[in-house]
Amino acid sequence: MNKLRRKQLSELSEKLTELRELLETLKDEEEEYMDSIPENLQSSSRYEVAENAVDNLDSAMDSLEEAISCIESATE
Image 1 (cartoon, rainbow, N blue to C red):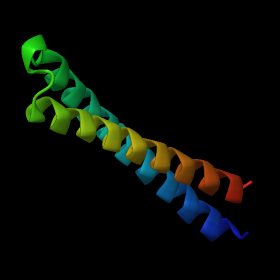
Image 2: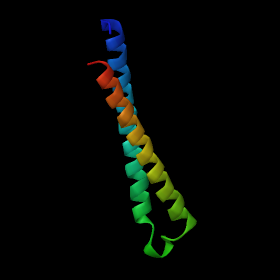
Image 3: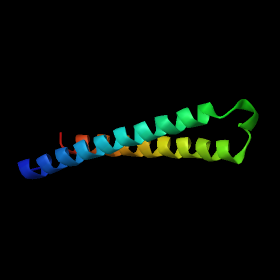
Image 4: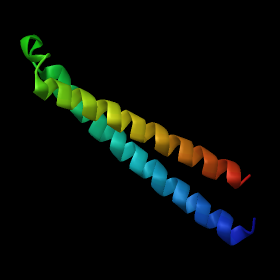
């Protein structure tokens, strides 16, 4: 791999890392919201929506982490 493509991939990896960090912040905020829902409402649709959002954000973070790892492996 030439130097230019390696540099481009490195920049892409940095952008993906930034996106992953933003996702993590949003996931943490949603978890805080979910945790603040009173116990008697934890079986409500509001809680379920928040829980699904946290799960999906977690999956998105994992996918970004895998993409970052693959890009880094490609540049070695």
